[in-house]
Amino acid sequence: MQAALPELSDAVRQQKVLIVEDSAFQRELLCFLLNELGFDDVQQVADGSSALAILRACRDEPPLLLVDLEMPGMNGIELLQRLSEEQILAQVLIISGREEALIVTVEGMLQAAGMPLLGSLSKPIVGRDLYRLLSTAGGGSGVASRGEQPGRAPTEAELASAIERGFICPYYQPKVHLSSGRVTGYEVLARWIEPDREPVYPTEFIPLATESGLLFSLTFSLAEKVLADLLRLSDPSINMALNVDISLLANRHFADDLIRCVAAAGCQPNQLILEVTESALMNDPLVTLASVGRLRLAGFGLSIDDYGTGFSTLRQLSRLPFTELKIDRAFVSEAHQNQRARAILYSAIEMGHKLGLPCVAEGVERKEDLLMLEGLGCHSGQGYLFARPMPAERLVEWHYRHRERQSLDAWLSD
Image (cartoon, rainbow, N blue to C red):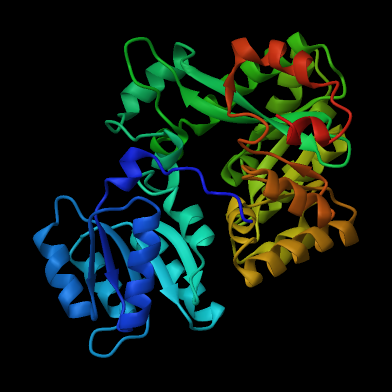
């Protein structure tokens, strides 16, 4: 007998649901499954035009939208496009019997439109799969779903003042070796933490720093704090991964200044990994390549960040001496349900093996993610399953409490 599913939260079950499906049988099946899961307010229509009229009427509080793609009249794709054009942001769950490639295309369309996507289910619908996706309803999407709510946009003057007063702080998220369960290092995530003000996240101030010319001073202010925290760990086996915009590598002074900064702190260059987004383009290849070469010569690590999300992957791999591949979280989260994402994930890991580069997968949030990645031969993982990003004051205590783990079982049993 199959174990009963845990109850969904009251906040989820109290949401309205709109089913858009031309098959009467499929509509009734979905209604039955939703009632079994505790949803009381379920409405159903047979075409996109009827759904659009309902959604326009409840624009301020749109229901969860379970939508088929293939319908007569206005199909599901046209309905979703119209919702985006009219800025009606319903949380969407795609239900379709069509091929995976088409569903992936529609998911990409929704992501491009900024519309919350719960996921996709193939027909025939299974109650457990429906439960799994609906359990995430109400959480929003992207950064907001991770508790990083954007606030008032900062000004250039405020950012300059925050850098000068040391309010740009490092948060740390551990990287774990998947075969041994051992903590090998931390990614540095910048946060703007100022008294009497909500935290400001990188998506709000990094673009401003880049546009205003403050990125150089921001990066070195952050690096100095990171190196001090690295010394406090007193663990030479640990490295810190610092995100570096590729434009900084085109600055003739960057490599020299960073080498001096690390030496002055009393750290070793091989304890610092520079993460460069692979989709970024080199504005000045001569200076950029020279900077990278000198930094590698000095012992710094170089990671290609968000591997697989840009168009310059192979070109970058052939020109830059990377020591690590960082696999974007999107491939991890989609690999369980999306065969293409899983194939790309596997190919990225295989590419790392062939080049002799360890792969670090981002977005490890479930035990299933961990087991899948370990089975695919991924070197390391990073994500909420291990720890959320933590401030410096928690780093030493957390590190010494977890660094002695000798297997994955310790993480799986938490």
